[in-house]
Length: 268
Image (cartoon, rainbow, N blue to C red; front, side):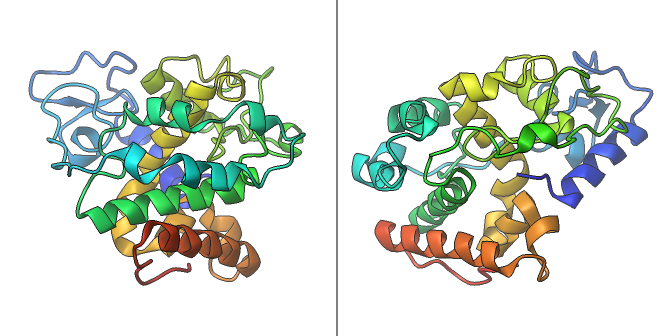
């Protein structure tokens, strides 16, 4: 997974705009919010998604969807069951760990109508299926040979001895994702990024963290917008139509399984 251009631009802009603010534990004034990136401010960028403390905007109301009733054993096993017996993910990923992880993200698959919830769940698992080969892979193939350090994002400096390549169900990549994901979940994302590949619960939480911060809000724009949020620079606008179609195929299949229409705007 590569982060979308919009996510990178937002990260850099936030760092530049609030360079003088206190980071990490914030120490914000009473009327300011501590953003997901650890800076103080009063706008939606600070008080909206990921706000850690202060007068954060209230989350939207959630519906009564029970995740375990949608992501059933049959549904989950229908995905991971297609992975080969020698796949490392076979002994790593499980439905129960997913359900344990999703408990920390109460808005995932529970905002809007029941159909909206089912579409979001189908979208999440469509991307997971594509990125992991039906839960076969825990780490990005060949990822260790790639440079996923952006040293312009000084709030999350790279450890030169670590690699920030794709890991987990939706493969978390780049230092500017590992850093805040670790702060939110409770692991050292910059100095121990391998935790995402070693701890199944952290692995699912990291993917859900990325989803809720960068993808969840795009669901209202159609499945194509979620592709752009995850890997748009490499796949959208004709860059790789085959992979876009593969994601769409998984999504429409899972929507059919969950008994919901996939909606419009499926491609990017």
